[in-house]
Length: 225
Image 1 (tube, one colour):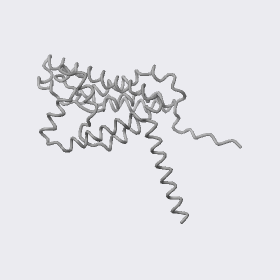
Image 2 (cartoon, rainbow, N blue to C red):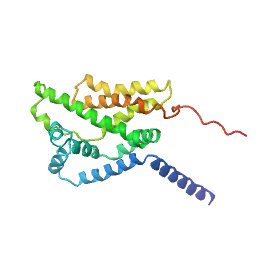
Image 3 (spheres, helix red, strand yellow):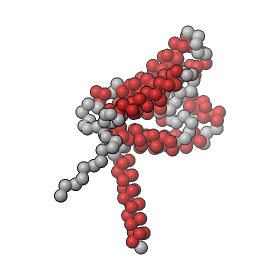
Image 4 (cartoon, rainbow, N blue to C red):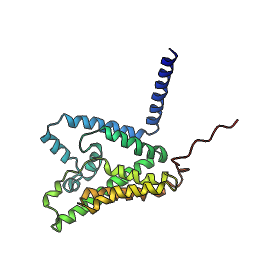
């Protein structure tokens, strides 16, 4: 009986901890909720309709030339591939931590800067490649949706959240993840991801007054008395 009571109490404490964590990063979890709805919607579309539907919300060269503001917003509301659960993990580990640390407004600035600037620069690079004959003309309609540029930017800015010397291995892994693809079979999305990570690193002015850094192996101080 006591074991059952203890188990119920543990479940309640765990539930309250999850609720508190979600409430501490409202923007992250509202975004995840939107992605859940749009992912469910995609699973109810035929493959042909889905392709055209997403193309109209893609930040490709054609759509950017016609409806830049609309597609820059809508492209961040869909998941490429239709698998939502991995993004729950990624958002909880990176976006939620960044939002809790920076505050919702500054977190939004990082996300928007990474998403918009990386998209525009990478698409301009693709346009130049098309004009120079290094990419086919059909690439103006390439499907380019998803939230990965914003995620890369947030991963970049989180470098400053980690205390030295642990910051440097994290930075090395981050740069390796986003620069190695540039060496082998580079695509415009690889360029965009690398740019987004660098844009996140360039957001240092937003973090200078955000308090102490996080030490991965520091244990909480024992209570006095």
